[in-house]
Amino acid sequence: MNPEPRKPRSRLFRTARALLFGVFLLATVLSLVWAFENWRGERQWQALVQAYAAQGDPLDGSRVRPAEIPPDQDAATTPLLRPLTEFTLVKGEPVWRDPAGVARLDALALPILTGEGRDARGLTALSNWQSAFRATNLFPLPASPGTPAADVLSALGRWNAELNELESASRRPYARFVPGHTGESIGVLLPQLSRAKAISTLLRLRCAARLAAGDPAGALSDIEFNERWAHLVASDPLVINQLVAIAIQTIGNGMAWEGLVDHRWNEDQLSQLQTLFAKRTPREDLLRALKGERAYALSLWDQAVRNPNASTGEPAAAGTGVPIPKGLPRGWIRQNQISFVRLHELLSSPPFPWIVDSKTPRRTEPELRQQLATDRPWAYRKLAEMLIPALYQTMAKADRLLVASRISEIACALERYRLQHQQYPETLEALSPTFLATVPTDPCTAKAFQYRRASADGFVLYSLGPNGRDDGGTFNTDESKADWAWPQPSPEKKRLF
Image 1 (spheres, rainbow, N blue to C red):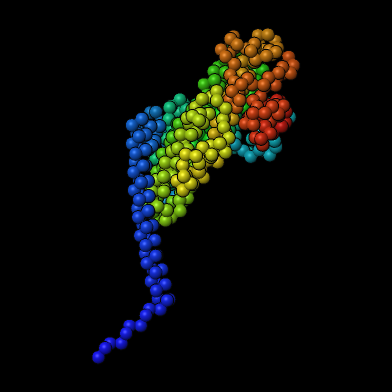
Image 2 (image 1 turned 45 degrees about the vertical axis):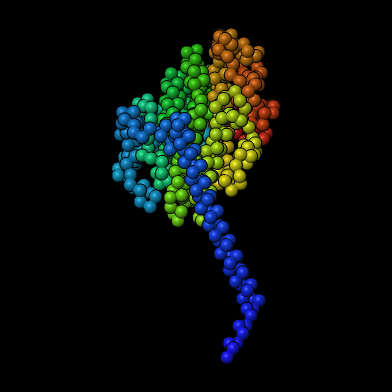
């Protein structure tokens, strides 16, 4: 008996089987591509790590951040600052082991100022500070009001012991507030740096009061203290530390400016200030911080490679971290790490050498983005590319401090010239070689600063700023319309420093 013939498969069945086979084939191909991308990314990344280590620039940051610092070289080990380093993290928040010690440092807080911080000439409004101190019962003041400067200095005398301790600590080379660069410890670092900047604000007020009281020597010591304080903050190589150091040094420019406006500095003091400003190297300092930041950001990406299911949205200290989407091939993360290192190369060496070479003007953000796009495929650079705006703005802040420092250096030389000749020179070239070995050039253009003598007792001095265009020496917070100018005595709140 013959069996019944098998019925032919339906078209639907055949189509479904073909689709399943296609899905299987596609999944196999994707798995192979995925595995290959992971292998290639890891292989190229390890080769880059070894190459950097061989040239003496390890990507783990060990070259720029010493693992151990002797206590006698660490300002953070002084009694006033040590409580900030002693904490336990609970859900990302510090629990201080010595809360009373932290409170002692936090007590170095100025009273709330009800009036303007500057007077009609742009100088520190000491009379308003006098009123603010007298409105409380917290400060040692004579029963009868004295001059604003005398009362402010009396009030600040409450913290003489603390400021003397910090001044001594500022002579050490390092300040290590957190033991390592991890996401949780960086979260603690931010309020610590805020406290550091508050000390600089206090020094600015004391400097202004000392100048008004006829004590320029004391005022100069405050500026030098402030400068050392900035170097301490920047000694831990992270971009956020460098940004706070830039803010502190900018405050120092303003402290010197107040004495220059009223001609309170003598020849020797002006020479010391001129040297202080000339020694500043904000671009090179930022490059060192970028290497520390690079190591920190790469360590976060390493975590994403080792533990893909962990949260990877943890930002780096200066906003230079990016959330890494889950499910990315590990090899693509490695490729973006390579692009991140490449981005740092572009920021610190030709064809974008404007951090290292102070005579080279900085380039535009689109040029930087285009160069990275030329070097790296889209999927291999996208995460790293997201970091460009934050990094670029950080560079701009360093350039602004560089301009402010060079302008302040020239202003000190101009004042020395005035002391000798009873007027300012017609041109900056007259300052060399007696008052300046060579006249600094504008870092934004690599050409001469703009200068003119406004009167026997005044001058106009400015950089062409980021746009490289002469806007008449007018400062504007909009960089596309700004010149970075030496501030004139005026109530104008918007100025270079």
